[in-house]
Image 1 (spheres, rainbow, N blue to C red):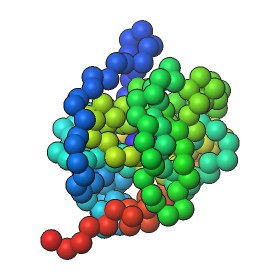
Image 2: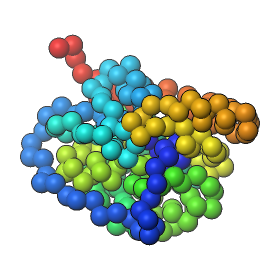
Image 3: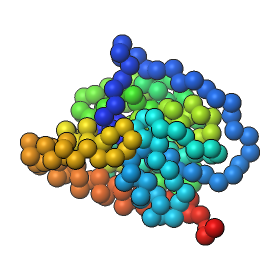
Image 4: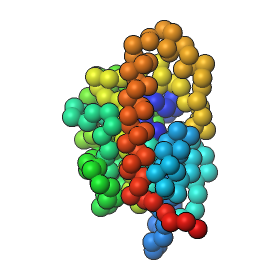
Length: 223
């Protein structure tokens, strides 16, 4: 889940957390797509991939085996429009420190990108620019930090849902920690800022459609 669409707080003093590292996974095996939101999980499964929901910030239990972060992301820089699919070459925290760096997962049409693992909502244009300058990241999400700390991360694939010029506004708080929708927040968003909410919902649908296509790269055969 991208840091604009996921309502999760940062640390009390504003510093990035220290993710506890687990022993690295030895060997290969099938990849499970780890999705924050129910909508992301549905897109992954419709695309034929093995997927599970791990909640905002990957706060739910992680499955066994190799994992790939999969879902929506917020762009930090210009040139990444809604619906653009990116595949991570590196994951950094909010200070710019590297948490993970490997060859990117191969997904047709995906652009290589550096992903910032945030612990807070990042939506405003100034805040996005400041985070990009500090970390060198192209996009931001909320789950990659914990997934990297598992030492079972094979990569991260994200579809851009919002940008510096196309923020999500109040819809940034529309997801529960378990990845379900807070419909009351959605309703208030459409009532209080209809233009932003309509645009953000349209961009999210575009990104989810792109995710469904990207999931084809992880398609599993019938059991």
